[in-house]
Length: 231
Image (tube, rainbow, N blue to C red; front, top):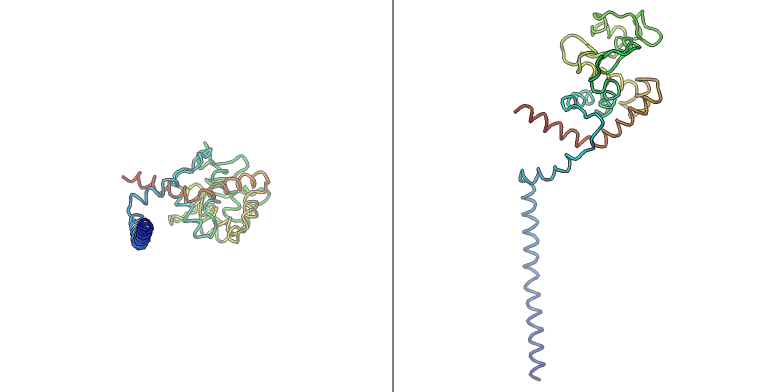
């Protein structure tokens, strides 16, 4: 009988302990959540949270960090993906690292425009592939470009639309790609307009998809590198 009473008492104590522990557990859980939310706002935690963003594939040619802000601004103005501009730049002149920025068929500048496309096909000398007989003064004059319906852009506001100036070249490419369909999501069509070659289209689309997949990491790394270069 005594043993039975002891067992009952023991069971009651267990029950009371369980009842008492429930609010304590809830309080601990709530406190932990609140503390974690506060910890997440600490700079060191935020930094740790972005460490994985630094791990991106080693591309055959790295995109120079200094160009990414230009791609972004041009893309924003013309409503196209900045990664598409990066892909074209990669294919056209290997990010402007080629010995010459003039092709055997007459394409010029960082983004390899045919002069007639840059200044406008209404120029009287424009025919065939579009090399034309265009003087430098005409090629870089915004008024002349406007009158002939070209795609050259004076991006840096120096009074010239120069395919050999990196900003002008990238903005001009963005202008042309947007007008060719990229602004409406017709990426493949726009790339084909840029160069009527199926292999060219495949190559540009390959890098566009690759860069687009890792665009957050690329932008993150670019900002870190550019900030470090200013110190």
